[in-house]
Length: 312
Image (cartoon, rainbow, N blue to C red; front, side, top):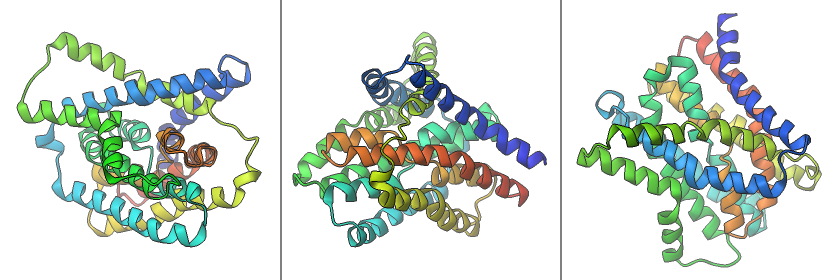
């Protein structure tokens, strides 16, 4: 019973903030243009600020594990390569292929990973998750740009793909965070506190915007492709990679960080990136919506199961 209550306490705040967003849309406070502006604000300002300050304030001496980082990045690359082979075999349209690939391998780790780690171990024990985010998020963005570029109807040159990667706000903020760590430069406390306050807006606002973006009116149009992506992201990926993580000896905070990475729904920014690459952004939006809703159940099951087995 304690494991169930703990699991519920982890996922309920995520669910509740999304419900707030959807309610604000229903009552007319949110509309589509406003939501797009808020989404862009989260993607370009708040989430990069959150990622930067988390890297900047992380204790790499205490939470850094080369084995964990290499393992996580190898799993992401392995999932990406498999999907780059499999998805073209089952979907003929290029505009759908890149969207489906990033919809399955890429998770909303920055938005779900930290709340999960905080709920399980407290805000003082999130360095393992933060450090993993710092390495995995840029990799997610890099591989998403590659997938969308490779399967774009407007074939992109490698240099264009590289430019997209370098201009990604999350990658820029990661690099800046690491530069401060490597050089040992410290910001004045006044700046650090202000940036932390701005970063504190990121998670609740992004979840509320995510809830406001829910649109259930066009589900039937992509029912088959949507089913493939949701099952792939929320069932197949966790069922493959979480047991592999256990077999590799990960436990406690490290396993919970990996679980959050594999079990989190598709990143909200996949919709923005699909728009920018002229891919099927409508399908990308539906994947984000249904992954986010159903993941509340699947994340709950993952946490409850791993707690019951005394693995986290």
